[in-house]
Length: 150
Image 1: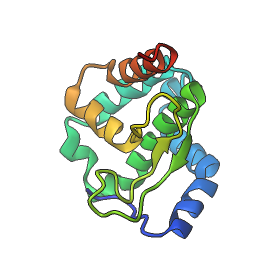
Image 2: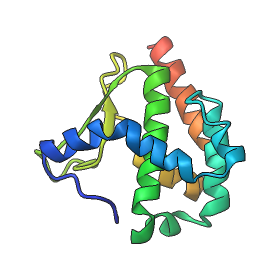
Image 3: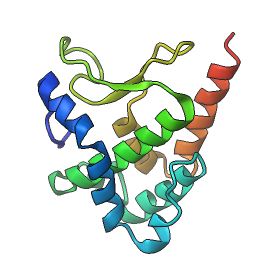
Image 4: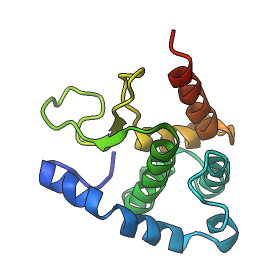
């Protein structure tokens, strides 16, 4: 997967410190009619996903090296929307190269859900699934799981 490599905890700390600026850079390149609807609410994920589906015909198009910064912005927006809605915190795993999300920022810290959420894979999966409601459905399903643990 072509993306900016996060290979150390210092890289990850820099990535976190750049969050607000990176999100502003991402939002600044979006069409005004899209940008004005992105307020980090669960419903805004539908707007973002519609833009993803319009911009990318498939997942491989998102994974082109010249798209890495843009896709990072998409993943950051998804992650912050999930974090604001569900809680949790950003984390990264750098000690086990066999870990499925090795070197990729994830959301963790959900009491009832020990499985991490990877916004980058949610972004690319939305381009693959092409439903237009994938991201919001995932967020709502996780919210339901957290509020109704069995």
